[in-house]
Each structure stands twice: as structure tokens, then as C-alpha cells.
Length: 273
Image 1 (cartoon, rainbow, N blue to C red):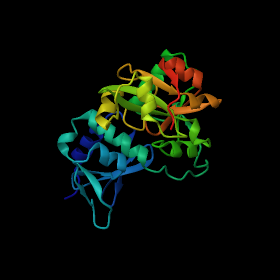
Image 2 (image 1 turned 60 degrees about the vertical axis):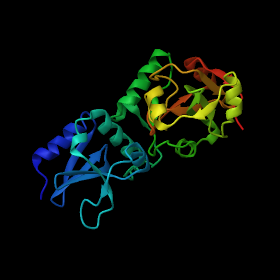
Image 3 (image 1 turned 180 degrees about the horizontal axis):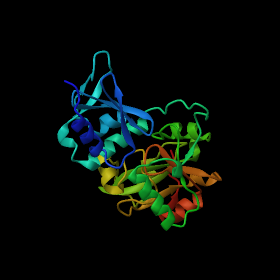
Image 4 (image 1 turned 180 degrees about the vertical axis):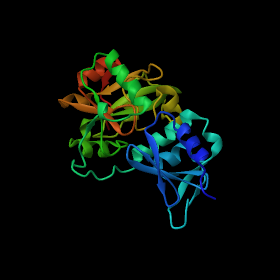
């Protein structure tokens, strides 16, 4: 059964304002987002490429091969098409986790200014928050995603210690934000002491999203859904510039220790192991 024009239009409508287009492929359609090949439409079924962030976000989705010889893809139920937030989130995570097509002329690690590309709503929210706080810099997109401190550091040509990880913990069950240097692990006993001896536990993905409005790997230091008590790692003060997540796993923001403390209203603290 070939894919109908109506179904293809339904898919595009489901992705809304995202920079998504379809191209004919073997009698069916390939799906592209900002020139990344993210999935296919076959037999009136939407398939997205399997990525770890995508599977973590939607673990209940089935997988199947869209056509003989193809790798397994996530099968997106039609009843999810009407849930715009869910569709956008899954697409953003899939897009961020996939490698960037090899450039024809530009080097693979070139950073692109936000004004040159379409970008997720979460990044726009972070950019608006930066303006409100009088920040001077802007957000940039890496050619690879910044899910880990190592990945971000390699993309930027800096040390892991210059990455300011935005980590959400629960202090006696209430969310708190810890801006930690990527050069070491966080000592939760020190975090507990900084918050008056409260019991510190790690927040899960749902806790992080509810408290910040961002997904894990993309939590920015400002523009959060709720105001959170914040600690800023003193180890970050040794660097002239540091980088934080920019509201999405593929986006980062250059800042300084002093600006980070000012914008977050955070308390500098020794929190490394």
C-alpha cells in the first residue's frame, strides 16, 4: 500500500512549525529536518530513526523496519499526531542525536549562529531569558549534540572543566539546580551540606522536565519553568570562559563564572568530589 498524499500532509501538520520536509524515495518518502535525514513514511506509517534520547523519551513505542533491508525505526502511532508538544519533543531529540551530514565546504566542527538556522522553541525561550538578564552573548549550535560534557568540549575545542553542567537534584524531595564543572563528579554530601543537610537524590527525567521545562542534556541555567535554589561550582571560576547548555541538547552558550552566578542568583560552592 503506497502512502497517500493526505497522510503525508498529516505528518507535516503534526510537526507544525518545525523545519521539516519530505522527499520522494523509492515510491515512498524520506523525512528531513534541517537537512538531517530523520525518518521515512511508508505505507501510511510514520517511522523515525532510533536514537537513545528518543527511546528514553518514548520507551513504549514499537520498532519495525519500514521496508525490506532497512534498519529498525520507531513506529509513531497516528493518535500521537495531535499531541504537538510530544511530536516536537521527539523530533527535536531525534534530530539532536543524529550526526550532521558532511559539509561540502565547511569544516565539520564549524559552529553556526542561531540566526542562520531554524531552532527549537526551548532555545527561543532560553534566548529570551538571556536578554532579560542582560547577557551579552548568544547561543550557538554545534555540529554534534552536547548531551555530555565530553561531547560538548570536543565540539568547542575546550577542556571538560569549562563545561557548566546543569544538574537537577531533589533536596528533601524538592528540585534544586547544581551548576557543576564537567571536569569532575558532584559530591552529593557537599551538596547536602550546602542545602542545610537535606537529603539529596537524583531527579529523574520527568522531575527535570517539570522543574525546568527542558529535557535532560538541554537544561539551561536560566529561563526555567520554576525558580530553583542554585549552587554554582567554584571550580568554574578558574576559567575565563565557560559553556552551558542552551535550552536543547545540541545548543550551547558561552558565559563566565561571574555572569552565571549573577543570572542564576546562585551560591558559589565547593561541590566536586
